[in-house]
Length: 69
Image (tube, rainbow, N blue to C red; front, side):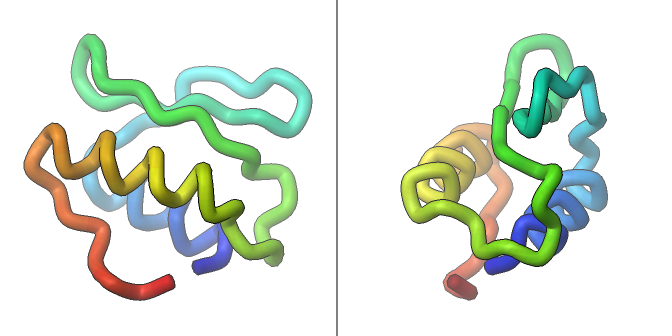
């Protein structure tokens, strides 16, 4: 999955961009659910560790990212 696809999915799911520090951006849903990821490289593949953490966080709030890798 490309970084731009993950960012697009997060935004469609209701996450909002909170801040960027260097190439790391943080997205937030509600008051406490946060996902931090590297986003300044939209054509790169998402790092497997970042993707795993994003899936875990999304699952905890009832959103399924899907099987696409």
